[in-house]
Length: 200
Image (cartoon, rainbow, N blue to C red; front, side, top):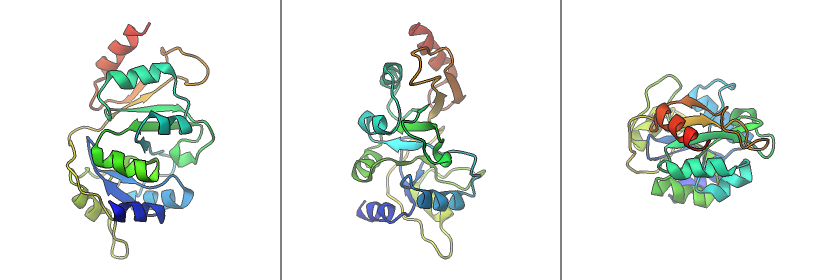
């Protein structure tokens, strides 16, 4: 863990375990994001999400309405990533005016993020390649001859990723009718819609 914390603070990327798949984490700085996008061979117009250890960290980044708190309380921690209005304009690679946040549940991820603050939560793989289920293997696949990617050991839940939800607005209206499921994952789309109906 100490090596990962030190690497992150130096602007490096680190592979860490989550309740779904290994994630590639870096601090949300321009230089660290440059490295992450290079490692993943990811297009700059495809934003990545941020992992937070708790809602207190999330509230420093985005507007969190009561409805989102209820949504996250209803489903298992770590199973939902929510796109919300950011409190300040972020790097476009984090979404700019909108940011995707995931409250992680894996103990190792929580400890890491408690130590360094929010980090990226994108899958630890080259874009278009299938993700590995082991942080060590994922780190190896992203390492190059000149750059070794450190990792934090831990078992991942495997399978599908978190469900990605776009909340209509977290600043202008409590209305949830414009909320959309952008990517079905651990939580099925029908489960989200059933929950939304229960809030009307």
